[in-house]
Image 1: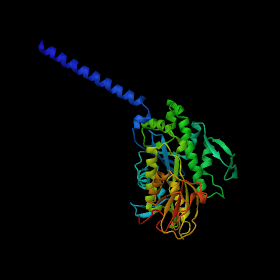
Image 2: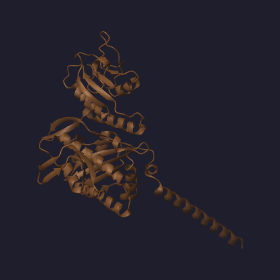
Image 3: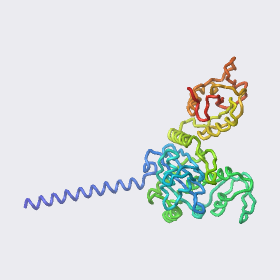
Image 4: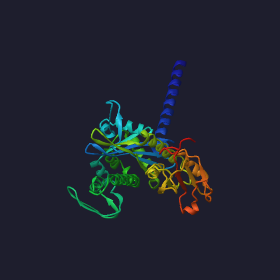
Length: 399
């Protein structure tokens, strides 16, 4: 009798444990499935590689860095002509020579190494499937500054102003080439389209979560995400503050290698990694006063084009370069920054980019000081950067 009661008690205890375990498991699953994307991904930056594929090669490769708590994001445009040493074959070639849509790991790894980050997710869209998604989200709005009327295998017509592109028009918009258009303008056009595409995905997010639509949407892309992660990730992306997204193209020097023109990153890639770190800091910290500070760059040396090249570099760090030019003379020995009263701390943060610690507050010119007077100079910039002989086009030396 006692054995029977003992067995019954053990059975009842096991049943209670199973019921409790099942209840806890159900509660956890319900919480995860009903919670927003922020809780799913946690308090971390989400790095995602988007590739638009055209004729078997990347037409555009964009790394989206997003921090959900601040809703801030940054985008890096990786040109296919980027030159690098491909290690496993020990030769210099284009980065897109590594691209294989079936085995994307090598291409993704080189991009991650270039930016000094880890890429968690990837999304590949063929040009045809991009067009299908654009139709699924009922078009993408782009601003076209001047009307386009040309014939290139087919008639290409785009009116000026804000225009909604359907799938076919979107494919045409990012692939057409004007005879007089330089490469940079085509790159900028595709960058703007990508941001507009992200904006539209966010606007149509609720519609894309309808089961039948969601299944179709996912079928148009190749990704390393499972279905649940895919749904959660695009739910999170819908919260991006697109108006504050900074898109940065990797810059460098063009060189001929084995009959092709390759773009080699400035300073062996260290500059773009610094910019990536700065971008990550900006989207995580999200300061209240996050306006783009204005800078005037003046060349105080005999090195031709130094101010222009420095201005381009500083744009990558998010500064608004209002003008570049020559200083009042070309034999400045030291580099310095002139700022307005009350902005010294901001100027010091700016100076850290090039390791310039000589910060001078706006004041009348002193004899032999070499400091331009902002009031007399007529500059409206927040900072005037005067480049001296101690600047090596990346850092101030000898500090």
